[in-house]
Each structure stands twice: as structure tokens, then as C-alpha cells.
Image 1 (cartoon, rainbow, N blue to C red):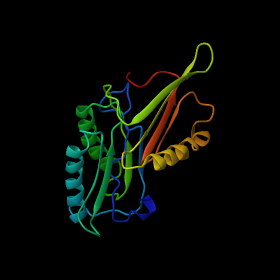
Image 2: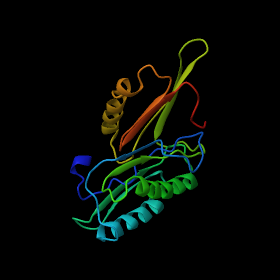
Image 3: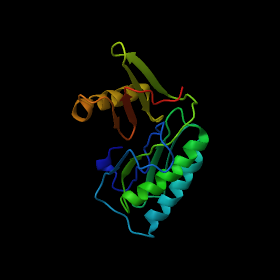
Image 4: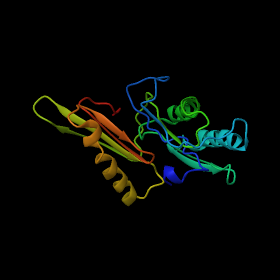
Length: 195
């Protein structure tokens, strides 16, 4: 679903858990992606609150959750993605924090994305990491991940697309990240993933 077609949907949470930071840190990224808003205390907000609770229980066991609550025009849609090395406990905490934080940063907005930092434990799941030598004393570390509602072919297209964004955001920089609603990519010259 594209954000331009999400008038009655909410992409509440699409986030990555990034290592070597602590709970309560500012989001690495947030985007209020539509000018359409909802009314406080209305049916849409009731559905949004139910959806946040649903994602809280659905996401942590696998690190990925999605769902929708209600009927048009008050239907909400949400997706939550925890990085592959996140524990269930850290993932659950982050789903709660992301739901709260996105409501502060994009109040009454019907479509939004947030990427929260959190300290995580190593429990490998569906994502890839790697490293390569850039000379005698420098290594490049990288991570890619897709949400688990994508097929491998669509995941590859998503990763190819965000890697294509690197020249415009990160050219010449020693580290960078590109985050979309369904996939993310990060690279640094220091290790940032728990082994």
C-alpha cells in the first residue's frame, strides 16, 4: 500500500531497532506522510488504540506484526518490524514506545513512520549483516532487513530501491541509513550489530 493511497489507513509503525543506544532516545527517523488527519476521540482514534494494543501482542514473538481494525472510513492499518537481533522483550517495549512517540510527533495524522533506537540482544532472525575490508585499518559494516510480509523478490526490489537512495543521502559519508516502510539498510565503519 502506498502512502498516497492511505487516506483511511494508518501505517502506524514501521521501524527498526538499532543497537548501541538506549531506551528513551529520540527517534532516528520519523515521517508524517499525509496531510489527512483524524478527529480526537472519534471512531478512527478508537480503532487506532485497538490496533496499537493488537500490535503489542502480535509483533514480539516473531519480530513482525501487521493488522487492521475497523471498517472504512475509520479503518486503521499498522505494521511493526523489530530488527532481527531484537529480543521479544525489547521488541514489545519498542512497539509501545513507537506507538506513543508517533502520536506525539504526528498528532492526529493518518499515516506515519517512525524508527526508534533501542539496545537489543542477539537473536538472529530474517535479516542480513556483513562486513568487508576497506583498507588495512578500516572495515565497512552493513545491515539490510525487510518486513516479513514481502516475498523475497519484492524484498530484493525494496532493498535495491533504498540502496539507490544512498548517493543522495550518504555520498562520501562514513555511515548512513535509508529506512522505508518495508525495508531498511544501514552501513557504518564501526560494528553496530550484536554478534
